[in-house]
Image 1 (tube, rainbow, N blue to C red):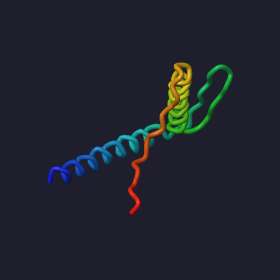
Image 2: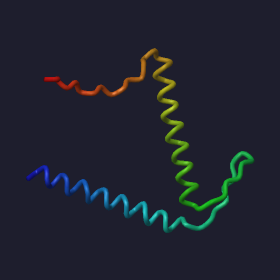
Image 3: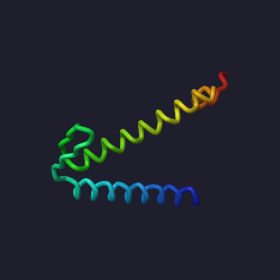
Length: 86
């Protein structure tokens, strides 16, 4: 019974996040012009924000990856569970 409540709450939270994202897209539908260091980016507001977010996400991942390499640690891949063959 507890697992069913958790599943319902999970879908409610997902629905609320989707609603917030939809409202954000509708509110930022107008064309915008963004200038930075001589570069000019024109497009819909939500796409410009999405591109900036993805660039920041990739930059953070790259920074973390390079720090792990400098420390001499090999970036770990998640281990897959071994299945016993019968």
